[in-house]
Image 1 (cartoon, rainbow, N blue to C red):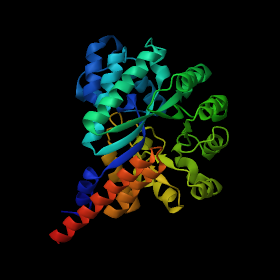
Image 2: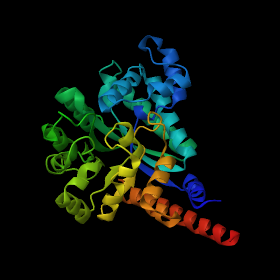
Image 3: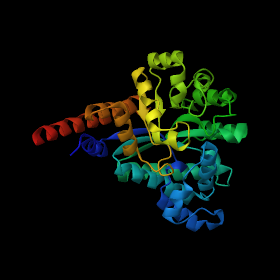
Length: 349
């Protein structure tokens, strides 16, 4: 067995947490095909092979277009519940124990699903997933930036006035170009005042100034992507000193053309600078990946062994907003898994 094939086996069984993964973006081809069959009027392919071609993006704007075509097929609360539970099932297969799933309520409420029904559907799926799959789901409600301030108002209203038990944080997604972070400050201020944590996307398709804006205007506690931080030594130093985590998604950055090739990915520079990096899948089926694959990519980019990969997993636990008992339990599970793996390897040598 080669070093990396053995490491892939280690990763497959490693207990994990994920912090940057989107609700609709996690719709598997099987679920998308089922939704397409139920709602053929939207023209999304039903054949898995055709779906793979459909999910090939020319740039970030094209990705948003395809993403929203899947959103269009979520027509009622049952569609929402099915999608959410099936995401948890896919996570369980990868040994994901905990995930902070980014959910965009506005995308559904503007299509006619009542906010109350939407929230009931995701909460029902969350409860079932924890009981039946041993996967803990928590929510980040995010503003779709391309939809403007009306979307920000509705998202803040739902989050602060109707926020369900699983809601932990408030985010901002969608395109960065032409969507200044600072315009969303009043909505983040409301969310933070209501006890939510700030986790906007910034610095994937724009430069480090967007990350600075997210930190200063939106009081970001974690940054979604943040890969352009490597262009600003002062920002790198700030992130490292404050241990402000970045939610890094390597394959996503390639798929959206934010980074040209994996060999050019800035993850090694971020880690070398002492930035707290976490590894995530973003929109996994749409990008032809999953969290295990992303860990494998990170291990290769960073030259990690099993202990180094386990440390990456602990980074996600540290950067999460999980409660302390869950944090201690998951860290202990990671440590026990690593110790068991080392014993098995020693016995085999």
